[in-house]
Length: 383
Length: 58
Image: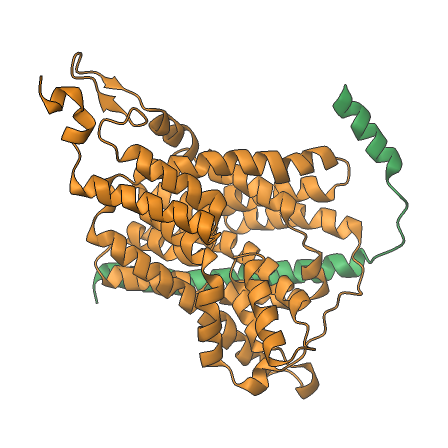
């Protein structure tokens, strides 16, 4: 009896499998040692190991004796949770239950940064198209710039399932790297004088409970009328928020924020890993996607900061915006707001930018979901 | 410029404009809600909460 019969996994191991196991170990290291998005990167890292051991029963395999396919649990999870978009949409319910929209009511104009800071999505899509990707793949790569994992997963699983693994890894990795990516771009685009601008926090203003309850309902109806294709994304987010704000479903709201979020995140991470097999991942495409993801985050930041500078052209001298706030229009919440607040304090310890930064960041959460919905609507019309 | 890039450019233009339209509508919505439903000292919703708790327990 040879090695092939005794230890078929070792006999069937290729260098690509070993590289992917190494990738899995790196993701686990980043999650544990560096605390980079551990809730997603750790399951994805472990899953990458799980699916790259030859003949892994976690994946569907052909039984040599019968010639029939034996379904692997990760494929079952993928078909049930990702292909149907159930997992990312459930995550949206949880995120909706976590979001407090009252900072937006205190500084509503900052909502517009949630639009400006989506620039990276579309520039990256064009760049990916220039590199030869088809429109659906280019849109899926561009959506990394939404800085919003579930939106990236929904778009990529619909338009480019083969690229889902690298797109998810890029999206979650760069979200964790916001404190490293954004500051140099912001410093490049702003003067010290601009970074010293102080802004009113508006934190004293109280918001009506009725307004907060009506907001998710009205947003859902408006979004549904303008772009019905965006309704699954926006609707689930707003449903979660309504559960939070209605005041009569506190137990459900807490469950959505805690148990639902934890359970689905756990399954989401390890299920995405089912696409991280060596044959799909060890390709030049993966390097391109990782590079394009960085490009998207840089140009999101660029879009937000430049838009803030543009808005300042029309504002009075005593009412200027600190352009760094524009960078919070990305969806990475609340990390981006925290980064900008810290940058502001580094320049002037008495400059408190946290509240306006949070407002723009909440706008970014809406903006990223809207961007995902628009991409889902537009791409099939042109592809 | 390939047809794919041209289409991507078109989607980018419409997409960015679309996001600004959406956000502008949401901005107006917030202004309207804030104007027509200003903050007032609200009565505690204990009665409602108790009802929901008893429903959930059932």
